[in-house]
Length: 439
Image (tube, rainbow, N blue to C red; front, side):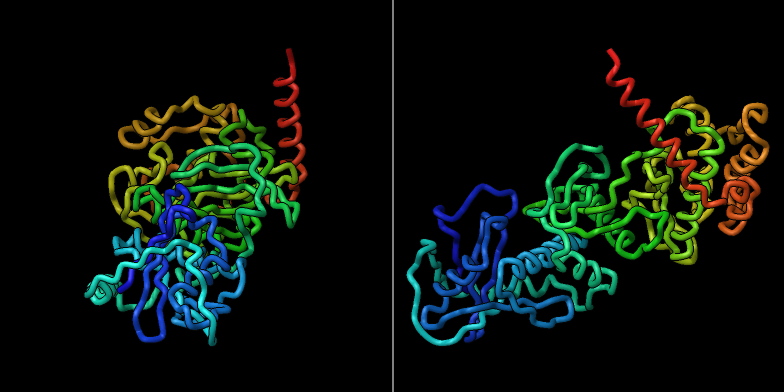
């Protein structure tokens, strides 16, 4: 095999090295190492192909998708789609512990003239390198086809709906799950987005969580689940573009009036019920993953540790410890009812005025003591009963999804009056602004 190195005149410092394998008509191949993949243009690739095939004029090239179909690239936009698709396969190979296969392209060439070596390419023609390199790569690849969900994800990543050039980053909204979340402006649509930017040099476990979140965001279509606009790869990071909720998460609010919390609870229960109907267990239900906006909408987010249930049972130990159900803390099998516990303890924490039950205290209660209860004198009987039912120590004693929706506390506030939440969010945000502007 021939090895081509991108000369210093074209190379720029980058954390991501891209190897493009140019397949030539006689069955051989040339590997081109690119150190500045983000700056790579369609015409750059054509120029390099011209070095490899000097007796032909190349106007386009092809790559293979997950089904083995050839996709033609004729422009910078189509090349971005190709790179997005390729980087998604790279991440999947990393997650599965496989060797990373070069990006293979197939020139579409017609006759004449050759081109000058404007890239300063160096060609190494050592004998035997072709056979050895290609066999080492092919032996590492799985023979089975990709899962349908992964194939669908690659189509989302490659469809060009979102790209770095159209995003204008503004404020940092927060950190977590291996990445940073930004408030951003999408120029073509004029929308404000939340963009989670995650580096690919993170642990394999976090990469699996990213894949899980992408699959679930793509699959979900509910007004109680955060909206997903698309994702893209740039250099060594992936960016997930989702709906921006201008009210933020519930963990930043003080005690919420019960008539407001009741309507928030209705939306959260509907969101969880929707996930459960898809056999998806959230596994990280907590106030910081419940978002509100000034329109009065309430939505669940952060599905990095969610899982597709098999027979409604899960075994892995992931999530935020302080909100875990007893069976999860003990390392036992768990299912939908563990999300119900987390729902109950989340609303208890909110109404206990945020932070009055610290994580260590919560863990001690979960493992060693009886479930904490709300004092009946401070809260309505339906709300106290709802929390008590959700936080039963035995999973089977907690309400099932249909029982949650039929609980008197949920029924009482299931009236569609989003304006109640809207007014409360707007008033709270205004109070914060006034306090920040006060001397």
